[in-house]
Length: 394
Image (tube, rainbow, N blue to C red; front, side, top):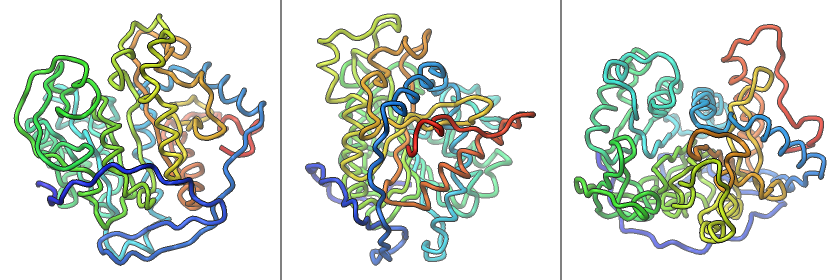
């Protein structure tokens, strides 16, 4: 289950933004000779002042929907199989590649690990990806905690949703970061919040016990020559290191869609009680690991970033734009989360979408988001995504 080992790659300067005239995207996997497709790249959206105000107003009034516990990302996850329509002709007859980094089941009791039938914030995204994609994808789940990795394999074999597809499921007891090598498990808090020593995040500013030695890989090394349809990253503040290790994947725009946790362990200051906004000094210390910095880096690669919100009865899941001209300082949720929600730590999810990929974007903002609304089976309502009247594009 260990990924193939390659020499570590250096972290390079972010490339310039893609041309507005055209984008080149890779859509195949499994060989080094990818078929290349050129497609018009849309001019970056220029939201009006009215649009920006509508986005912020909706976000504040639906702030609780940003909390990962609201299942926005989970509900989106089980609809992502709809994106296959954009890739099936270019997969060389093989399955799509799905990668889940930080894939362990979190706080479910052992009784429910093998029996859960409904989405739960403590469950593994990799199992729901496997169940929804079935034989049409190969799901690679990375989990540095050996016990959690073993639990994940056992759950996949036991659950009716996934048991028929275990040949498409590989669990790697391997850490993921900026480069390949060896490290050790950082035992901070409960077993569901352990991370990898050497990555940024909780292990960099808290005293953590040193657990078992573990091999590490970058996603550039693991997925060299391949084009993942979807990558999910949730690693207790190590998201920046995983991003550094995706430099070639993102520079070459080989990932269609990716999600990242944006949460309390990105910086020590984000651990402040929710009723206290960060001071100017704290904001300055966190600016290099802020949401603004993260979306800027992804934007330079050619990806647009959105905060995932669970939405309401009319909208289903909503993707709140925080990229480019949509950026507003007020949407730096971890700086002042009490404006959006209270009684919990900063805990949000991001979605990055390849900008120059019309089919993926159209399917995501059409079929996938509508599918999250249909999941709820609300009666007497119709699908009404927000911002439509105020914003011409997102």
